[in-house]
Amino acid sequence: MSEQMADRQTLIKICELCPRQCHVDRTIGSGYCGERESVSVARASLHKWEEPCISGESGSGTVFFSGCSLKCVFCQNKKISVGGKGKKLSVVQLSNLFLRLQEDKAENINLVTPTHFTSQIAAALQKAKAKGLTVPVVYNTSGYERVETLRLLEGLVDIYLPDLKYYSSQLSERYSNAPDYFKYASLAIEEMVRQTGNPIFAANESSKKQMMKRGVIVRHMVLPGHTKDSKEVIKYLYDTYGEHIYISILNQYTPMPDLEDYPELNRRVTKREYNKVIDYAICLGVQNAWIQEGDTARESFIPDFDVFGDYLSQMEKPSTL
Image (tube, rainbow, N blue to C red; front, side, top):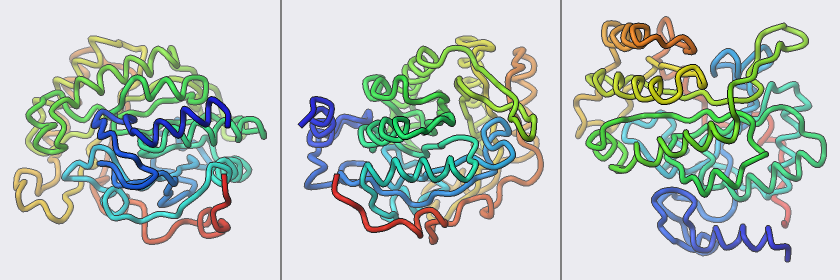
């Protein structure tokens, strides 16, 4: 057994991949994330609802992983974060999935909620790159990450797409059971910037659209009634990184069922609330940013996790590693 394979098995047997560090042996049981050792993918598709420099013309090759180490009460992807949906794939199958998405002109490989499968993903990326994977790899995360885990991806990930959901520990404890969220997310973003450096863009050969090839985009979704915390998040990012990162300010919060204990979240963000955050960012001097316009807070923007997508539907039964 190779040293790399041994390290990967150790990470799974005494799981410390996310800040929860639950130390569960995921070869025999599941951790806080709800997942065991086998990689579980809920959906794979060409997705056109990311930032313009990620989706491009053909769409981002998104791979939605089942389970989640954060589990926010307002999660829009609850069907897969806690619902147990997904198709089990081996490392070899996962690497082949990346290559198939590239063959179908995916602008990049977009790993969505990948934290708890980081060691297997790293192995799959190594195999795929050895077989000709050349499109950028995007690590699309809640931001609740350990620096030690992110270092497993150095040289494998080109673009980091983390959330910075909260500044307040009171909010992160109430909505995500993670009072230490900002502590870990801020250190994680620092590591992401270290790995990727300043943003790099290049024009797509066919569409001429400017596509991100390397760098960090930090997403922040404005929550109803919490514009003060949103302003703190934007100020922190701009004071810390200036124009060395991009910020994506989202208005797409969608109230989901089962929020009886959180009545303050049982509505959409108003146009006035969102504009207050945007105006604040402009006053700070933020220039490298995306904002959303129109009615994005609709359930129709949430992927259909009742179907796997063409890619997973055609996959054979998992092979042995």
